[in-house]
Image 1 (cartoon, rainbow, N blue to C red):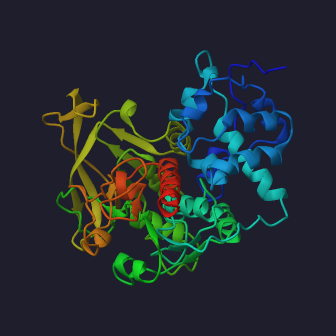
Image 2: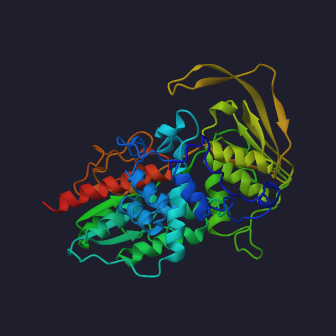
Length: 461
């Protein structure tokens, strides 16, 4: 019998006053009983609107039915046909605007907890599967993938399954891209990411770290070494700043630097080689998921007060509703309709405050959101000793500056001809944040998947 409850099974989680002092995973995952009960809420719609909302086209009704029937390994097998990183996606995808946003059950209640069920199936597999994945027979063709983030890993995995000899070149010392340097441990444990990467290695994907394309080796040299096609999934790791006075003071970080120190370099651990100064009052400028991550990390590092400073209203916050809710529960203070105009420093050039103005929302801009305008006479100072700028990123210019004939746009993003990811260079494809600018993990994965299909077609001619 279907479960006609209007509400999802709630996700078990650490209590806010406990979790805001540790880096352990906040969400604890469904039990088998909860997963089966939630799966029974799915109506198995014939037109499958949820699948249309999934960038990697997972057969969602099919895997949920397997969970409802208690065939958990079968559910994982269905997901794995379409996704190279199911345990990751079940944790960090914005399901509310994608698959769950299309769910029929959401019309008169809450949608089916698709993301929570995907996480459950992946975690069950990881805990119980003891065998080795089957390694496909080689077709003898070499493909290079630049960047070991979500786009690159997905493209590499899909090509390896088709028999290609795939080598991933990663600039950092650890594979995973934003999954390891950007998303905190309490949202995405790094052991989960490593498990997914180990699975790709097991089917034949080679990963070379500490290789900077454009410095260590160029795209032209990769072709000379016998690679028949190249996928660029190098992300958007170049931080943006507001260009206001005081951004060069001690205690001002980009969100990329701050999160890399915390997540990749484990700055929160005693004896870390990459410490973050213990700050008492921290302002994070921005309202996206990265801003929420930075704010919640600052709190866990010991800050007494952490502010989200965002120039629009709460309704316009671009972060996931779940991340905003978790941040509030943990004690993050939201200063919406507030915009920084100067970062203040003391006599030693350390941050001692952030001067802001209050805003009000005017007419919609080109994005459809109401444009924030300054309230006259509203200047005020927030007392802080650290500022984290989280206002977006753009692609690093190194690859475009060292590659002849690679077209980019005014934002520095690589231009592609269509959804296949084909660039202006023959045999070179691109996808993810390197093309779109900073976006979501699952959209990057979708681009990597499309590019893998296109590369296979190109090399099969």
